[in-house]
Length: 77
Image (tube, rainbow, N blue to C red; front, side):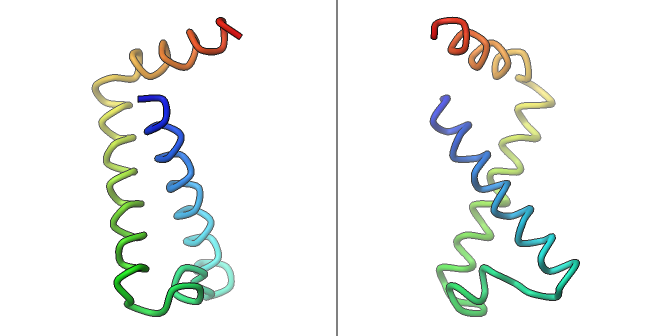
């Protein structure tokens, strides 16, 4: 599950940075890189949305489990 947490975090950072660029500069990096309304850009948006839902679920229902998973890893090293 830790790998999934890392993937979701990366997706949310990419999504957040893209929305920041759209908000501040009216520049959509995802559309520029992969084409406007292309299948790949839509897939990226869908994955970012699923990542957000995963995080919402983690905070609402399993925050302690996520916290324990990360803390146990930090203590082992």
